[in-house]
Image (tube, rainbow, N blue to C red; front, side, top):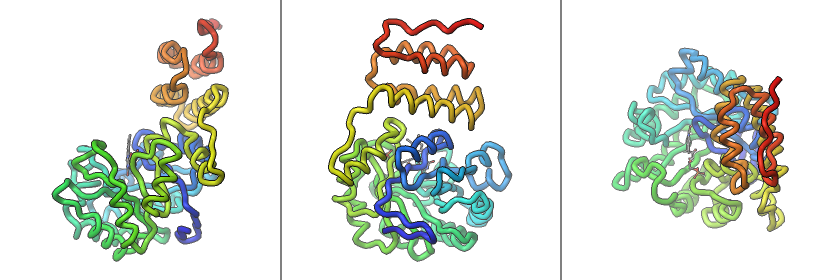
Length: 330
Ligand SMILES: Cc1cc2nc3c(=O)[nH]c(=O)nc-3n(C[C@H](O)[C@H](O)[C@H](O)COP(=O)(O)O)c2cc1C
């Protein structure tokens, strides 16, 4: 059982932070699927302090999606502390610090995984954030900078010593980015040494992987990233598998359509007409994977920017029909 202040999580399944994806609409969809904790997209500490409008939108959370962790990145301990105080006002259960992002826009500026090259700085950042807020602080990281600089065991020790309450390991190096495999052996080894809860992450592609990750590594919780976007039902499926040994493998078409429409409505509601319509374009492929007519559906939808038109095309989508009906002109 993970205990973080008033939060108690029993073998939680967690939605990973994903820039450009884990916004309010996706989080509400994943909440319905049964996730126990969800992470926001990361936010830049300096942008939080300067009250950047887009950044402040990203730290907004709703009562119905709790518990939520807001993830923060940056390289200056004082700014990270100041930003953490502002974030605490948004009311998350947890603040998470990003020490893993390999993207040049982040690590190229000395934040995210770049801090794995400077463990004294990592320590100062953790201590500053932990001291700045009353809520628990967690950290998410990778194995190290590259194969010659794997320092995860030292990093984890620093997390413990600086008051970090829980950590997530995505066991790849920064240099690997998303190449190669996520080496769960490190999660297993770290679990035997660590005194704070450890969340395992990396390459979960089906519910069986969730079971395998728990059994093989003995981690305290499992975090799912890319597969949650491809298959939002994975949390429910994995929970069923853990509880009963069985789960619904094929999600029926009507359920796919229902959830896609709900996601669409939430996107328009929370992101606005234009952004809501455009953001959804990344997701139809996932909702209707292997469904005949998806190409035609996407073509029709991508020609529309009006939410009403898109909604009608989605509602009328019928893979058994030969042709999609024309949109009626008003
Ligand atoms: C599009 C995308 C955006 C991501 N953004 C973040 C982020 O904001 N913060 C973070 O810690 N990790 C981020 N990650 C990494 C994921 O949280 C996760 O660690 C990684 O995808 C491995 O898990 P998976 O194999 O289940 O996807 C991102 C990954 C992807 C694919």
